[in-house]
Image (cartoon, rainbow, N blue to C red; front, top):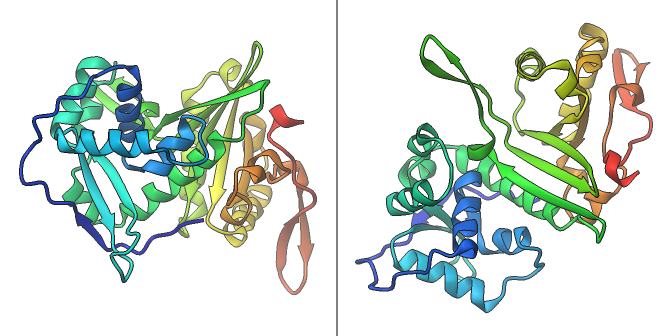
Length: 298
């Protein structure tokens, strides 16, 4: 999994080009993917459209959208300018266009971060990991199985309290698996830091509190951890302290070592509460006795 060192440069643009892009569905889909995942490179957008490689058309399209002032581009410097990865974000004009042509809430558009904010924070690494994960998963479909996505900016859930919209759910992305009439909605959270388990439990409880029992029968909450150590620490806490939590919502977990290729997303990479076993080797710990595939692949 690609984890970039934060050393970003905003690509300078002297002035907007006279080119005015055709705001057709393909163009709006590109802008929507970049908005919802906050950032994206050409390879990620290619994968979301079902392609394993980036074609010349997409490279040209992105450059023209940048020249027209709808995108900002960030170059990731890694010691040499040769082959510097190029990421795209929406500019203010890009946000205006997506607000006019797609049904996003105005408050969501206002919370979209500026390139300067992203560069000066630790968020870039997190967002880069998320779009990489989702785009790899996007290619895991089959002739009978389709997978679509909603990024964080499009997946946020709000409640209205005292005339204020209160953010209650912020999944990193949602994957929707469809096989004929069957639909499986997978809310995905990427946990890359050593966040306290109690904080993670509170996040899960927000999902339980937000969705009705009937809705929870048809969704999966997937936690992707940075490493297996964090994953096992989570399950040890659940088994010992919150054994009934997983009865209220279907929780599956995995980690980055098991999600580095598209093929792995079709394989048995997920743990669930029933597969977690306790052991005592000096101190109490746990292990996972057999992982499973995403239910639609079983």
